[in-house]
Every structure is written in C-alpha cells, then in structure tokens.
Length: 174
Image 1: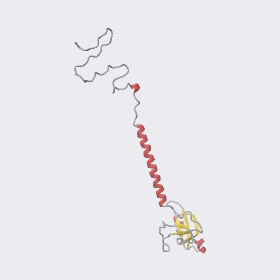
Image 2: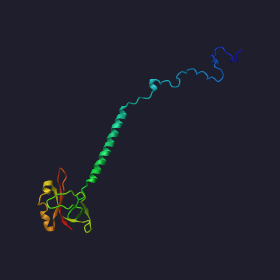
Image 3: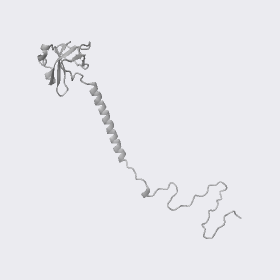
Image 4: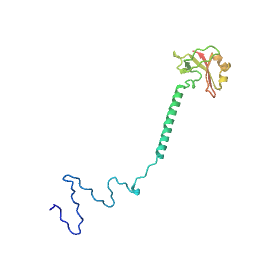
C-alpha cells in the first residue's frame, strides 16, 4: 500500500513522487502557455532593437574632434600669451623698459620690452613718435624716425609680423 492521494475521474493526473528519496528536488513545473522556462529567447517581436556600432563611432569621432579643438585652442592661446607684443599699443609720451643695448646699425630681439610708468626706475626710454603700416624694409630704413629727431629720437624699436606690416617706435633715453 502506498501513501497517495485518491484519483477522481476526469481530474488531472497528479505527479508521482520520485524514487530519489527524502529531500530530493521536486520535478520542474509543467510548461504554461505564453511563458517559457527562464532563459528562453524572446520572440522577435518582443526583443529589444539591436544597437549598431555606427552611433558609437560617430560619438567617438565627434568626441575626438572636440578634444582636438580644445587642445589647438589652448596651444594658440599659450603661443599668443608667450609672444604677446606688449608694446603694440604704445604711443607718443609712453615710456618703455627692458630694451637690449645694441650698437648703431645692429638689430637685437627685444622680447622683454614693455610699457612702464614714466618717472620710475624701470623707464629707460620715452616714445617721441610712432609710425604705423611699415614693412620690415621700411622699418629698418635710416630715415623712418627722422621727423622725430628734433624731439630727441635716438633709436628705433619696431615690430613687424613675418608676413605683413607693423610699427616703429622712435625713442629717446629718459
């Protein structure tokens, strides 16, 4: 005699206990319509759309361009800050400091030239004249500061970009 529930006519058959003994896992539940076992693939109509790699590629390219522009802008700013022409706005009556000592007819870089307050120990030269829109050849000519000799002009300082026109400052010692 077995210990089983009674069977009624027309009733669904009941699962029989397994022969695995006490503590054995129960059998899996029967398949229910509309739901599959865990891990079963979804039908195509319910699957999420597949993402293409094109969006990631475009995002990567745009990101790379943004980084390149930021780096280029930073370099341009740094170059401009390092090569800033501090005397570009100097005008008649301003004073200039830090010009190198040069012999007549010679040229020297004056990267540290800057406007300073007149009457201070830094002030070495006073601007007695300014001539704009000159090429390098015009700026280095002998007569460029001739109109300012009467005011004491003894030397010139000029800044001319590599391909363009610049200015000349006619200076006298303070």
